[in-house]
Amino acid sequence: MNILIIGSGGRESAFAYKLAQSSKLNQLFIAPGNAGTEQYGKNVDLKVTDFQGIADFAKANNVNMVVVGPEEPLVKGIHDYFLADDKVKHIPVIGPQQEGAQLEGSKDFSKEFMVRHNIPTAAYKSFDKSNLEEGIAYLETQKLPIVLKADGLAAGKGVLICETLDDAKTELKAMIADAKFGDASSVVVIEEFLKGIELSVFVLTDGTSYKVLPSAKDYKRIGEGDTGLNTGGMGAISPVPFADDTFLAKVEERIIKPTVEGLKKDGIPYKGFIFIGLMNVDGDPFVIEYNVRMGDPETESVLTRIDSDLIDLLEGVAEGNLDTRSYSVNPKTAVTVVLVSGGYPGDYETGKEIQNTENLEDSIVFHAGTKLVDGKVVTAGGRVLAITSLQDNLFDALQQATADAGRVFYERKYFRKDIGFDLI
Ligand code: AMP
Ligand code: GLY
Image 1 (cartoon, protein in one colour):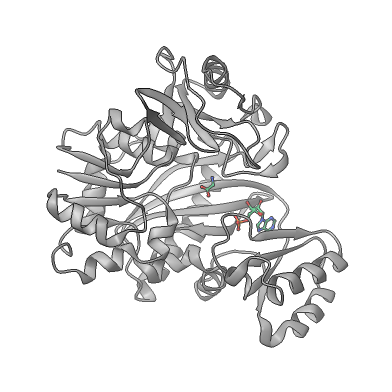
Image 2 (cartoon, rainbow, N blue to C red):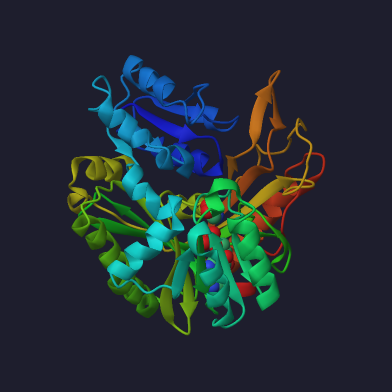
């Protein structure tokens, strides 16, 4: 089997690592990949939204499957593009078509979907230019804090939690009338604030049956103790200690089953991953968001715990017989610590040589923002490496990943030393 992975981050490195373990793999390509993905396959210099370039490459290189990492190509319709092109329509794409990708691409769409299928989520109403005044009046009837969400993709920045009514009114106007997040905030979802503890559950589905992948918790803030600016994710752990069997059974019954059945009832084909962001409110799960891809850095922890052959599972997705594929999860704990460039998520420098990644025997070093320049691996992004350690228990995994994160060297390296320690 020849597989093409689309993307270049730590998530795609983890996919490459896991797919490369399969005896079913012949050739692996990663477009565009990074300095680390080259150890598992061949990097291909193509942008993730260059659908024609990707399709031409897939055809010319006898690619048998395309695995899409990030949301952007899915929301922009890479899967639909393949289906519409006679020369590549036989090649399965893992990731939903544009219609299903709206679960992530439009908050309004995903809220309507949840309401239609009785999936527990925060109460909400949507507003746009035509009823902005009603939106302001609605805010006056709501409890504080209150959550404002730009409908469209806003690079993870489109959610505001407002503590005062004045702030909420100002932000609602800024989003709708002044296009604070561009087109993405022309529609805004106003949502009840849920108080609880967050975690994520991942599902792989062929559109009918599904496998529940390991749950994970990520750490989004730049600073220790979950302080400071939001980032793409500074670390992750899997499994999540407070997501016990009782809680996960509720997630499956109340959320996963109705989600997969709902897609089917609505006539929305869906072959790929569903990332369900959850709030655990006093033991009951509520959906905060859907993403139509795996999380980063959650994937680095989650895939490390899957014992089964991932190609076999993905073939099951492509062929619509996922229920016949064997699936097992390693009970050990995985912890991922992300190393970033100093200054991230603000301005940062790149091009710093990375050293000491070779001798970390008890961790896997997944590359994210790295590239090879004159034979040297240098930093090339905000998130640089994702150090992942799989150990018998949470404490050992935390210690190992954190210690190994400390062993890597590059100028202005930064990482959080407290990933997961809140759960011990
Ligand atoms: P989202 O982009 O939808 O994941 O939202 C970003 C973050 O905002 C989430 O990870 C939560 O921490 C927070 N958030 C979103 N919706 C709510 C809500 N209804 N109640 C409380 N926090 C929320
Ligand atoms: N780590 C959060 C995300 O991938 O969206």
